[in-house]
Image (cartoon, rainbow, N blue to C red):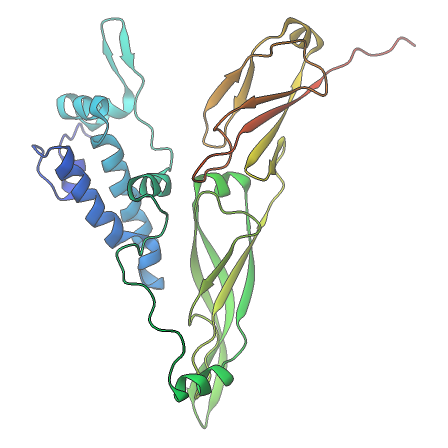
Length: 297
């Protein structure tokens, strides 16, 4: 990586002299144009890559400190750290918060916010015939790790899809792959519907692809609503001395919480705002257990 000082500006299509409003406008246009959920299926993977680059550029340039470091020292120094006297900037790390950045900027995770609302309810007689002959939806279950529900992810599902050859030749079943955007905050109750991505049939609209989610078990972590339960084992000495507990978050950070009393196996230490992402974040709870001394034989 060279010490480029203009790449982030080029990604957003703006000049290095751009002010905060121009940086925001560059991000606004490109984030909407390149959001993976607004692209055709075959373009989603490439759109996801563009979207992450756009988000990284905006995350750096909208932060006054990181922008000054980038403008003065370049990208390599920004990502590897800068020392000035006794002060040190440790380096920027892209933590994959591109969907969180989008939601914070627009106030919603919906990438169609500028589109008009859906048309009138009902339809023509042909529409009603199409609905009557419509084939069954394709329903698939997609398993995700808890950290993918926390950070967001690009996943892929494989489906068997009925496609029509002609009215006389009938249909064939073909294997197809479909990219699914997992937004931060999704859970096992989330249901995504992709209109027209299911089976084909004559004299009918295509059915839908319906994606349901399931969460894989994760050692030491459990989701309880919007809270994350993190099980942490303390030594007996640590419990008695009320030493601060280091909690590993799902985006590779550490937060520390100090007990206010002697820790017991029933103690829960709560860190506000560090749970699952949503409009108001849940909490992360350190559910402590204490090692016991072996009994004398």
